[in-house]
Figure 1: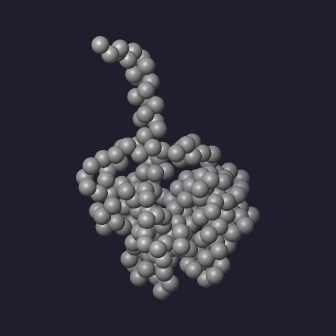
Figure 2: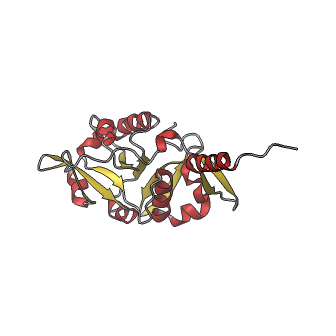
Figure 3: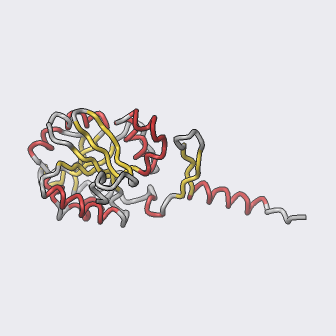
Length: 211
């Protein structure tokens, strides 16, 4: 006869699993438990209001590259509906969603900054409010714009869900195709008012982050 797990121990195991795992939906209708990296914690520090001026998205600031207001760095909350304004230009826009305090973000930002300096139209949007944005972007070409933070209609304390919800709002057909497997998306592409996603497993030559 197998020994029974004490009720209290079972309770703590359940709480631990719920805190470290997230139940998501797959394209085939099945579900799976996704292990959340420690760096995905929703408890990252908030922005210092003495250093940053937080406001809603202003398209003119993007066009004119206005990054400061009264000596404070401008941080703008950007929603999927705001991407429509950005599609007014004929240029293809690459949109990268990132976690400022995640070590895996740094090489991607360096790569995108290099491409932006060569003329590519790239927008980077943080998944969380964190002073780490300044440290990550201040020496890049992205610092000439306001810093952008995701502002989805369906917000969540979990950055993973915030990312999925943002992409879902921006591209309903993308969610229909990939469901919660959108967490494997490297970036979005906005072209002629249409949005598509590029996953990490895109064919060679079709992913600017990995080619």
